[in-house]
Image (cartoon, rainbow, N blue to C red; front, side, top):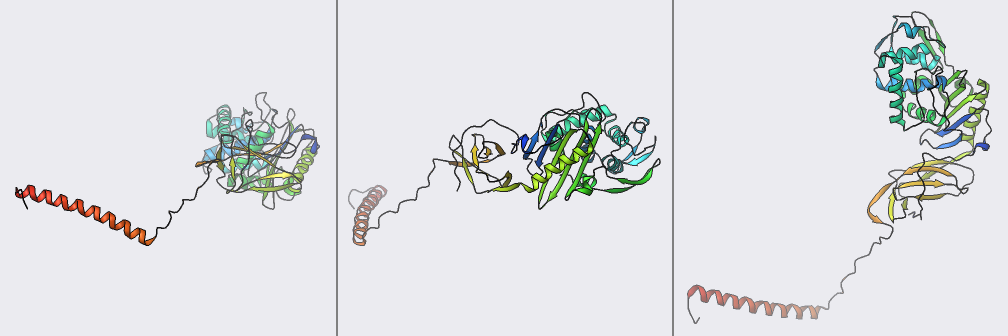
Length: 383
């Protein structure tokens, strides 16, 4: 049984376990998270608003996969066919299944496919972008993102953060179809304007062991952006880098982050049976086993507040992990279970004597009662 003395801590999202200077990066902003828990393992300017460029398409793909039928037929508009930038060469009035458009957008980064998807689902890029922003905020809990288009072409009001993009990606990767598409290296493509084999633009799918997605991006104002998921030995990590000066720097930074996550972090398991005590003496437990990652030889401090929020800190005072616990009903830290005391065993002769006295007294009362009722019923004075 684990009982921990606790103190109030201010609420935070998932906590950081690495300072900026522990990994030297070229990118202006970066985040590394554990895909299962969302725990932040490293961040550099993770909450600063940046232009995301084509990693926007991660959110567009998630929205399309979860809000529409992939078998629906989409008619390509003139506006979609004429969108600038990377293309899968859609032709005006061409009809194509929605799923193929999602594949063309995520694998080959087709801006035209992104616009066609947006117009099909919401009627226009603007309406789709507003709906997508609201959707991902509600689904993921992010707060510092605003989309004005589905593809990531530059707009002053089109922005996100490395932390938000990591969380959007974490949720998107829980969709099996999304996961399958972004891990696809090559895909046959047949359209009215282009027949070819698409090659995924994310180079780490070939170059990094365990990489399984997800998206790269570039526009002049955003620099090079890259979101990468990789899995090794039952551990999946997501790395986001934003505003790198070159694609080689983006890939180099991502490789550094993933290497650190896989090689320098160990796992600590919080057991379902563990019990934690809050300042108001309430007892809290986990609904099931949970785990968090930590770096190097670390002693942990466990603190839970009166609302059941557990915060784990390392011996440097850095918050590593937070989660919410369930309150144990009817129990507090001051409760003690007392064993019931057994009554002393009576001597058999004392018991016999006691029973005889009781029966004697009882039989006398019964006799008097019978006499009274018979006298009344027969209306006689002597019996």
